[in-house]
Length: 327
Ligand SMILES: Nc1ncnc2c1ncn2[C@@H]1O[C@H](COP(=O)(O)OP(=O)(O)OP(=O)(O)O)[C@@H](O)[C@H]1O
Ligand SMILES: [Mg+2]
Image: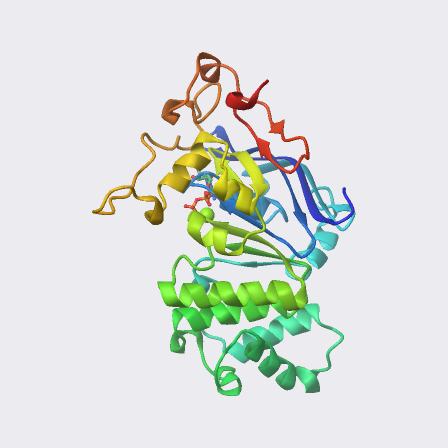
């Protein structure tokens, strides 16, 4: 682990057992998240972003169906081999999650206050019960919630989508986490609310010094918030770079394709969006060689048979898995 690495993921592999078939949905994924920085993880639907995020703290479900290997170093500890009780101390406290659909994460029969108090009871033993009220109001104000004291008394169905996501963010920060994993946190929201939530997450990073793994299928949204961007395709990371470099000088043909698909890069007057031709491989059945080769405009003979290794730039800041970059 380097000095300012908060989380170092090495050769993470997650397989699912489905109908007596083993499917590898996250395949040999490695990346680091640095203190106080945001790593954006982008890729088309089904490429393994959520499974990567959940695997980091073994949140995937029953061990009989999922097998996770590799190493996830967090604060000098490997989370994948840590005893369950140690993992419980990390998950929900030092590493917290927010998801796309806040409604499914909030309990419909409990008030906002009851749900937030539960987080304090579990993760903030340093705060006495008599201090809860003040703390919760401040917690909601920090995430830009109007009428915070009244909102504590409401039930989830009385809140708008944006308000629910603010509540989720407040709950995910009450424990003073070091890392927030945000899986498509703005996808279900309309554009103006989406922009407000991004501004809020930015300010949490700045003011509370929280690092983030920010997941989205939308490179535009990722570009708004990420310091580094990792691009995922069919279970593998195909490129990682500092955000500006990746957006301005993408290397992998898949990254270039994603950038060409952005609405501002439409080349004709009728603003027709470009698409990447072909289909994403489904259900872990991947083509031989480079998994992107059937869709790749730059495909060479060896791409059809030999999986590309990772090529690093001299300063080790940029990584790309593509034969175009072999010397
Ligand atoms: N609980 C599960 N059981 C079996 N397979 C699963 C499960 N969850 C995900 N998968 C499979 O794992 C692969 C990766 O799914 P994942 O949800 O990580 O994709 P994603 O990149 O997050 O997609 P999206 O952008 O749609 O959220 C898919 O092929 C999916 O079918
Ligand atoms: Mg997902």
